[in-house]
Length: 444
Image (cartoon, rainbow, N blue to C red; front, side):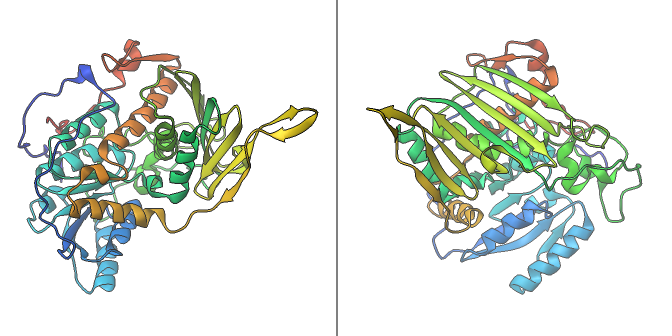
């Protein structure tokens, strides 16, 4: 589809961008129409990568089926349709324009697995079409979009789960409870990191015509118009500002989410970031391959850091979160959690301040649990039961975007919680979403 404007929304109130906020309220739902034995019909928008992984996780649940697929790449559509028919014995309906799929009254729930710059349009349209939504992380590609999506979710009686599935991991739940127990003592620093050795440089490639069967104009959507380049398509879109925020938003929302929740954190007071393309200065990507971001909160700092091409992260882990307290340090990641105690000399004898907790590994598949949590919440019509609702997803995404804004400005920037804006005009200008090609930011 070429440069077509998005459909008119059912609700046409004005978005007040001056009052961007990290919080919102939930609305009560009417009685659910889905019982435990009622079938939930899913549709999938964006069938590559995590979109497909999410769909597979939901299909493991009883009375869940996928009846429709939407993607701008016909090759992906055909491949997934074949896989789905092999899995279920039934062929799904196929769409190259997700808006046509949303007109299908038989669809109850939509999974959104598109690039970040599409999440806001996809989610708001799906809610206004009367669908429940599972949307991939990060919630959006800008702070303004995050607030629009939160507003849309709160105005709807439908449920929204964000794909920050670490929230459903047993080890994270246990670690958070330990942190909140106070046993670590005063926590002065929280470290979050992602060292991704498997991520190779993105070699420069020439612009080409789009592959056959790819609706490239639709793929660009609200992003700036530019020639097709394979580097920017499918997985590698993450490393280009038009569509995403690099590792800061890709991995950052997972780790920051756990840190913020465990610490009961609101918005940071200030943000400072430093880094760049230090490992691969001449590759095609735009986002930094090396970055350190410091968030200032009352009584402690939160540090994010990432690096591509190397695995030597803190505490010998490629990714994780460390809560550093006066009595000890708790470290948690996808492999489990442990506590390393601090020591002190008592009557001439060296003793640990707290007991050591050996590495405790998780049980089960957290993505599968996240899918089950979503479906159960739908069947019980209970927004409060969601492991990662849209408000939670917005807090993590907004915090990650703050880090990128600090990096782009090269300044220490300060957040005003009263106005929901930065005190620096250059930073505040980067809060807003910029839509192109006839597409417009949703109004809710």
